[in-house]
Image 1 (cartoon, rainbow, N blue to C red):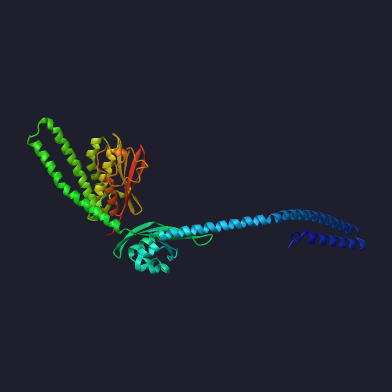
Image 2 (image 1 turned 60 degrees about the vertical axis):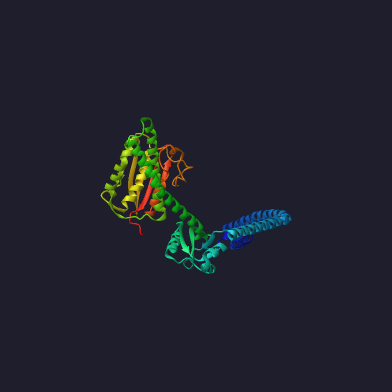
Length: 438
């Protein structure tokens, strides 16, 4: 330990006394210069000691004055801290009661699973919905809670950080599950990933949805016969010359509206088949470049009528490659997107169909230079019969994008879009490069 580590009241007196003693000894030994030097050094240490002591006394006086002021104010400070502590306790109690009330009265089942997949907490709705398995909520794990392969796979996905949703039949009811990744704080420096599992009984909604789908399917099927009869009768009137010249305009109006109704009924019937699972996919190997050129050729008549150019871009690595898919449904999906793009494109603009590979996904995109999609319409663009303000003057059924969405899903992929209002819109369809299972 060095001398500066000692308090000034300790090392300075020692240094002063030592220097004076050594100086006196050297003087008695007739070593005058060294003796007087050591005595001078002792006087210097004595002066330093005096300065340090004076500074320390001044600090003590200041501390004493500050301490007396704080001591007089201590009752007020203590009272303020007590009031703040009481307020914080009351707030924590109210928040705990609110959370407890929400979880208790919520009709949706809630189960919190920790990072080790153990059940941390749950609400009464979860007990009610899970029925006989609710006993595992008290000390079980994710595997005890739902042990079917689909549920375990979906929860694995959630524990890996991806939100997942699925449904399953359970004791005569249809339950939907929604697993959300959740960061659970374990200590001050780290957080582990758990999941929040929401459970809901959708039996009634599913029954209503099946009723709706059956009604639409039956109605569209039954309406096709009278619509066909109307068309045949109108064509016979024109062909047989029974309509005077002034009445031909009305017959043409009838035929145009019959065509629109036929198109609508076909789209409704197709969407109903997709939604009810009646549509079966047939996967085969497709020569990608030749297939896309045929898609462009099929859309060309409408493009010429609208005076719109068509363009095709294929990523070089996909040239001369085959892709496994259902050619009829893939063609239907891309034709719907191209038809929309052409209808909304201004004259002399270009509609681009492109394809690229992203990891294990093949991405088809269709870009146009139309009016774009406004932010207020972006969340509803794939709904049945929904048409934007700009689309209401353009022929269509309002079902094309809904069909694209459902076809993408049953083919194992997804559809989304990017749009710059008044400039361009691009729709993206991502499909798995490998054949979907099932």
